[in-house]
Image (cartoon, rainbow, N blue to C red; front, side, top):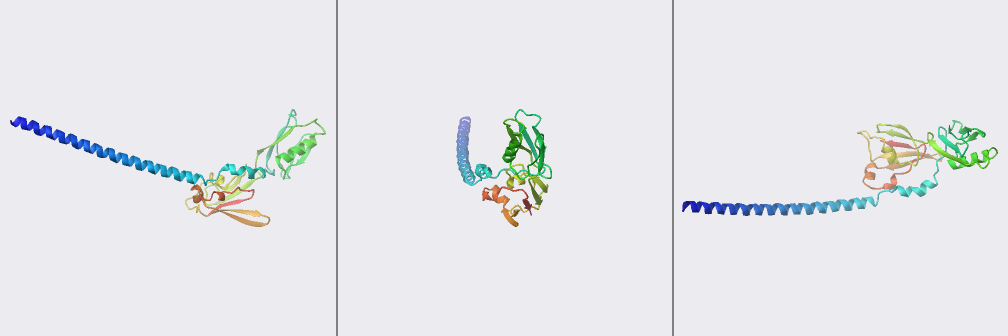
Length: 228
């Protein structure tokens, strides 16, 4: 009789423990479902926020029309590649001298400073017509040394930086590390235009959050970028 009762007690205990474990498992699964749902909702909220921010982020494609009218102007120190089809003796890389001129066989010295590559190509073509039948000339900018901006203030690499093409504030800041004391919300650009000084504000923290993307302006030769 006693053994039979003990078996019944043990059997009841096992059923109780089994039921308790099932109950606990159900609770865990329920909590997991709740957490999964909350995480999904949070992920959806983040995704929605990112999409909303991306709608306001400046797209480089917007530069195309502006850049079309802002062709590079050749200056002293630039290196040009002059290629004349089937004329290897005339084709060569030439530096623009401090006086703004370049030297080429047959045509001697030509004024390059202040011209675009297209304008210089047309000039060389006209000059070569007296020596070569239907000259086919290509002029490319091999190295830019004349176009520069100056970076000053709380950056680890202050000094002059070349403008090798269309360059915005963030292009310069991406290669200039801030010091611990930099006031990144107070960055500004100084520009001399027509004898007057202009100032353009740039808030780095706002920009990386997708706010006010238009403040990331194209820099011009002679601009000074200051990080206070």
